[in-house]
Amino acid sequence: MNKFKQQSSALPPVILEIKNLTKKFTVEGGRQLTACDNVSLCAYAGQTLGIIGESGCGKSTLVRTVLQIHLATSGEVIFEGQDLLQAKGEKARQNRRKIQMVFQDPTAAFNPKMKVKNILCEPLKNFGLLKDSEVDAKACELLRMVELPEDFKDRYPHNMSGGQRQRLGIARALSLEPKIVVCDEATSALDVSVQEKICELLVRLQKEKGITYLFICHDLGLVDLMSHQLAVMYLGNVVELLEKGRISQHAKHPYTKALLQAVFKVDFKPGEKIQPIEGEVPSPLDIPQGCPFQSRCEKCQEYCRREKPILRQIEAGHWVACHFIEW
Amino acid sequence: MLLEVKDLQISYGNKITVDSASFSLEKGEILSIVGESGSGKTTVIRALMGCLPGNGHVSSGDILFEGCSVVNNTADDWRKMCGEEMSMIFQDSGNMINPIRKVGQQFTDYIMAHKPQTSKNDAYKMAVTMLADVRLPNPDNIMNSYPFELSGGMRQRVGIAMAMVFHPKILLADEPTSALDVTTQAQIIRQIVDVRNEFNAAVIIVTHNLGVASYMSNKIIVMKNGHIVESGSREEVIGKPQHSYTKELLAAVPVVGGKRYYE
Image 1 (spheres, one colour):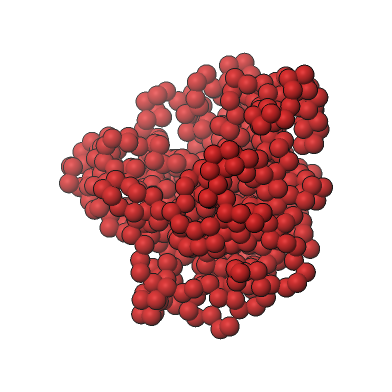
Image 2: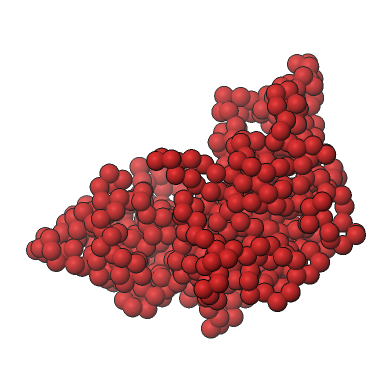
């Protein structure tokens, strides 16, 4: 039984459980790059799990390992009662139907030589679920779902704007009616007003179809807007896990607080200053012993350099990995 | 008046991209140009420095820098002005410098190209002082690095150091933090404000992040489809937006602890 399950009873069932997932890459010279270090997380059915962190913190590697784009070094990913990482061959292929992905760059995500209708129906044909004669009708249905005109089906992706292409990416990911959709910085390449429209679309589809999202983003405001649950990652570790609406007032980990202080608000009051943390994320090639955040933390003590803090529950649904938190 | 732009019209070939843009800038002021991609904000600041790409040109209107028109400048005139009177920071300064030469070689070359009488040693010292000024740790080490060995934030600081080495009167910044993380973005924005305070330079920053614009600017210009739809002081534009597009933009910015889809 995973400790993260022990939360308030009102929660929907767990759909995806990541247990002690570690991913190491071997780089030049035989050195080990630790991208994800013993990560445990749970996603609940029909809810959104937001993951935030700076570039290089392992958030993309985490979801790519869940999707088996990378092979995990150790750990388990439990989905529908089975470990996804153990499945091989045809079984692994069938599992992919249930977890799909929306990519960051909507320009690079499509074959430029394929028409929209073929892009949208390719996953279905790949699994033998659609006849050639049905392609047009299905493409129209999918386009309607993401609020694009039906006559787009005979276009090519380069005839579309960035926001339209991202809708196309969402339609393709949803064509197989997956249980889980991973959005890896799905709106980062878009302007704010387009981003808002895409987020509204994602939320509407979630409410209609009960999809679970893993929503990766580096914009705190956006993650706060979209998520039921929020995981903050730093250097391959989850340092804080909290429920929706708590981050602005109840964040406890020094890194989460530092992130909050680096956000540019639109309604700055005169004299209000941002307080960026100094320095940069250490290289994942030589992860320090002890707390991953030690090099940039104001409160860092001798003890932090020796002992790595584990994720502890301080309140229902709120977990923090720091030695200096009262719990 | 340091810079004055009057009814500027910019075209690529025969296609008008920016029309009737007017604004002015005083010494030490920070002006933000915000808008969505394709609204012409980058085109405007490129025109100010005479580096419009391809067949882009100023088709009517005037740009006055310290009272003199720069629209009809020759390549030689621009060479004298750029770097010393005004300079630019790009979205990724790593792309601006040669990837197969060390940062130090290029920095000293840059200084010596503008001030040929400077000795190599003096140029090196100038560069190191400047790198230390933008809070880069271990400037000698940076001088001896290739661009790819530096992180995005460090490369951006190198870009600021190179742009500010001759203490130009105007610093133009084209989406200087769009490729950076939130924490690095905050560091770089603070650095640009520090540089303004230290050298009393005016800054024009192009950004699509309204939070950044709101934090650092004295004046804000909102652009859409090549037109300025709203302009004014920071308080006017953020506090009392008049144009519906400005209101729309402001409402679309996600705020921590603000609106949420799930309650």
